[in-house]
Amino acid sequence: MTVVGPIGLSVRDQALEADVQAGLAAVEEGLLEATKSDVPFITDAAQHLVRAGGKRFRPLLAMLAAQFGDPYSPGVVPSAVVVELTHLATLYHDDVMDEADVRRGVASANARWGNSVAVLTGDFLFARASHILADLGPEAVRIQAEAFERLVTGQILETAGPRDGRDPVDHYLDVIAGKTGSLIAVAGRFGAMMSGADESTVNILTQYGERLGTAFQLADDVLDIASDSHESGKTPGTDLREGIPTLPVLRLRALAESSAGTPEDRALCELLAGDLTDDARHAEALAGLRAHPALEQARRDTVRYAEDARATLAPLPECMAKSALEGLCDTVVHRAG
Image (cartoon, rainbow, N blue to C red; front, side, top):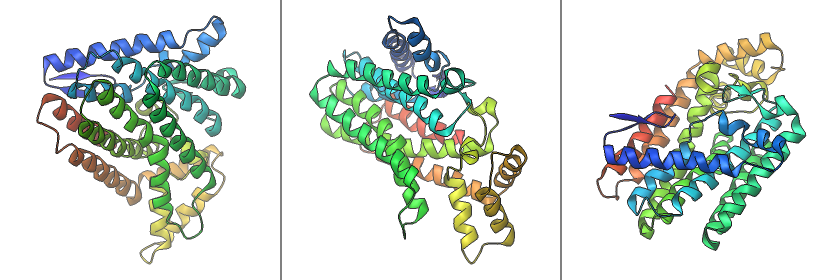
């Protein structure tokens, strides 16, 4: 059993391990090449998060999906680079919106160079991703454009909040399906499509990616509350401080508003609704959520989506790549504790 990639996927087949490791190494080279500029300052800013590392979850999924066709097909690695570049670009923009100070264990780009440089660097990465994408054909361009539209729509919906009468949890799940699930779905789709897998397999791996992507984000929500900065690579409770209602908070609110809600539930909701830029109040809110059953409910939601992703794989033939994809579901659940 060998662990592949920073996310810690266990692979039990040497040939598959070699293919995936070689693919991820090629993606890493592609990311460094794509983030080079004739202007040294732009190179430094664009490679800031590339060199900080990361889970490379999307390229890993693309490499595994490619096993259902020809994993050495020339479009597989570039398509994985496109997806990861797009993801990295969104991180630059997210950190500006969230006023985050830390990303992947290092100072965020906005903390180091300011908001304007961070936003423009994200735009630079989008441009480089589009340049690579153009060589992969019009269908790939269309798929990426649709996913990017969903990603931005998810971000806008998060900012706008649920419309009157809409269940906030349902709204939030729609948000993360767009913000996170859409791009992870593209990773599975590109890996399969670029390898020449049949249409049914491409569709299965696209659906798998979307469901696993939702589970992946829910696991991040749990980590934002439950972990320290060493585990998550960013400041704990960042979303909490910025007033972004992630799933544990939404589960708490739903309980507090129900007949089963207690005065303690409502008091914690009031604390969360207040000014959490104050370090003492933020620490109190974080401790309260860590001890609350809402966090465990969010963990159960994570498991449910991961199991839905696993069930999607059922029609695929039994092979080591399928086993590895099932293992990714376990890995995501493990991240959420």
